Picture 1 (cartoon, each protein chain N blue to C red):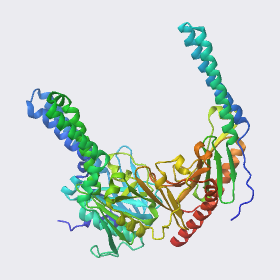
Picture 2: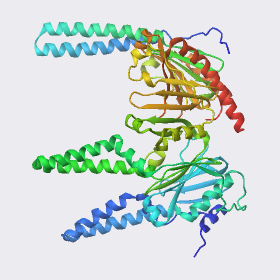
Picture 3: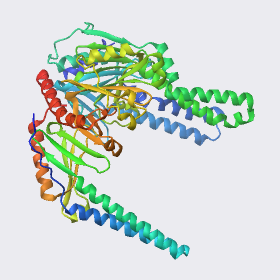
Picture 4: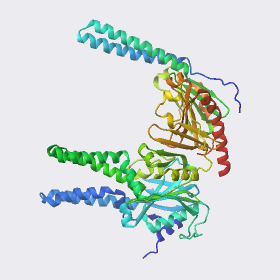
Length: 158
Length: 445
């Protein structure tokens, strides 16, 4: 059956900010450790070099995180859900609503602070990979209710 | 002297029945021998202090008490179309298995149970979402009567209607594994080769450098014992394995010391895999495994159940394996498509073995580097479909498509296909899977 044009939705822009915050928190901690260790060892030159390396790694991680957030998307079709993610390893998953066992909405403390949540669809297969992080909390709730309703109406046995 | 099966009939009629009194002993299994050895060893030396002896006596008494209590509080019966089982003293567990949902009942007889004439029943419920109910242990006669009756009742017969236990149901033997090839295959397997190398090394060391050998003797002996035990467990699981086709599914009987008799309904089969390891290919042998949906189980006793992959043909000629698969999946496609030639750049070792095919009901994929693994997946059992494209694949305009099933071991992957072909698969396969699911439900309902 021919599918019409798909509308891909993305996670909330706040996810980008959250990821940036995480990356820079780790980078600053690493900087502190590295500079402290180098100064304790008594070499300012080494401290400067290591700090530069750590800062560069932080910038790289920030860039990669930004691209990963942009690459995440989901689309709801009539019979299944499509989820795409990944920059180096691009993955696209198709999960039929009838195969859905349950939908899980989870939010860690940082996510909650930004008003975001992660929605994950579970099937009977452990390898099923349908996770969408960083959705606005009301969008997550809407998606969960919609998926649950569609799952019930499409449900067939194992 | 009660007639055989009287307890089973009484339980079916609704009276609470206990399991056989020796059940805790059999459940403890090898632990019993360990305890006996530990207790007897010091006693055989010299009874040093009498407190030591008292300690042993107390341990024995406590063990007997616990076993007796465990036996007292465990009971079962049939009530209102359900099988009810209760156990536990402090934390009572009560389980209920609706008879109409019973899918299969397996019989397991560990070595000790066989010696004592006991058997365990494992009751599998449709859906695969809960653990099998276990009645461990009943006398063999009780177990057989109960099994036949429960299966008949699950199909709607009343309690009083008595199917003749000895009347043979439809059963056609598909394969029987021969012991010679089985032993040879074990010796050629990974642990087997390791065992042989170790034995050879020890032997050479004993001749050439006796002091070194003496020093390493204990560790080497331990390693040898572990390997031998592992190999023996594998032998036991596959000895005399007979697969037959019955009205209720595939019946698999196997065992040397511990025997098991298991029925796998067609609905539980998630995928079939045929593996031809490198060494076996020269002999034309293969191994066929079936992946069933099962829960993660805990504990040593669930070793049988925890094997999510059931061996249908532990070792046999390739033609026999293919015939077996053709019997279970009669409409599987045969013609295979090979990947584009540039896939050789990405997977040089695997390229020779990659192929796939699909029709309306099945998908077949082959893969593997040294060994060749062929996976048959019924499209009705596919849970989700994923397309994965790594950086090397992107450069070569390739992609892989994964077919996920509820089984835990078999992964069907269509590897290294042309990008357009993979995109087309991602569009077409979900529709085909949906149609296959509808056909299956229509066929069942």
